[in-house]
Image 1 (cartoon, rainbow, N blue to C red):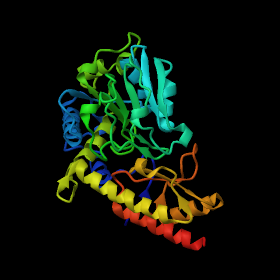
Image 2: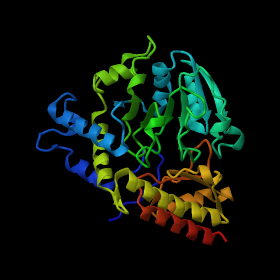
Image 3: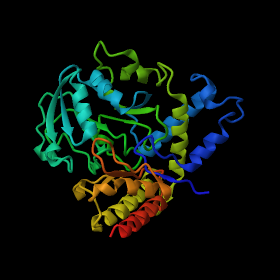
Image 4: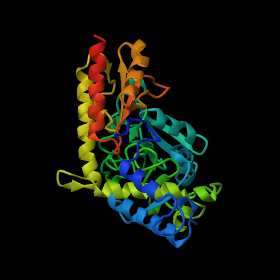
Length: 368
């Protein structure tokens, strides 16, 4: 039996194969007599899970050796405080606000540093990304913060800014929560990347932080030990009990990703090709529709999170009810912006987007 397609923005769909394997190992992982969530995080069984997950993730994302991979907790929202606690030294931090999540980051950081609004897309109702050439970067910034994919507003950086070319020596910090593992990243431009796992990597509970080694050891004196990147790195993400089951699930997703292939490429490169095709299919239909509209400028549209609106919003409830009846779930937009949203993360196959477009066509035909 085919499962419904879950377009939730997060916690989001997990590949069927991963869920099936996790279910089969729930009571007894590899003959150990224990389920993973029962294991000591320092025992040899879990350590083997942890080490494989780290190695697979480094390979998948092509993370250079001079970056530490930290498995933390608290999600992206906690990192809005943890990053300035580690990097700002209570100085100036530049923020580029392109949607709801970078706006939250900017506001949260004010408790720990001197946030400077280098650029904002609010005037365009977050339908684009200000040109980096026009950013007003500070000469003394500790770092520059951007959210490279705005889950709520559906805006994505398709190319990372080159801060050195813009005259800034500050490291770039990216919140890549909602498109990690969906595409490749140029690590030469990145100082820190962070993201919650619950969109593309597995269930909620795990927060991924990838930090350039030279940025360790700069935390404020009052930074809690469990949030201090150097402390976490020095203890192999085991300073406190890590989110063991979420790490295990993410590790299964990493192996699933490694096994994916498309047009002669594998892993993240294969997923990027699929994600381009999925997004094109959905955007192409929305653009020619008389009933639906996407309000993001074309060159900034997210491949992962596609918000759209019915031109007659009195039909919203009927649309959602019909979608649910067709096995298309969690299409309601975020409460802050309304409308609809289809999150088409890695675990959503092309067939899921085809089913959604088919429903969009049928519903539009009934409204004529």
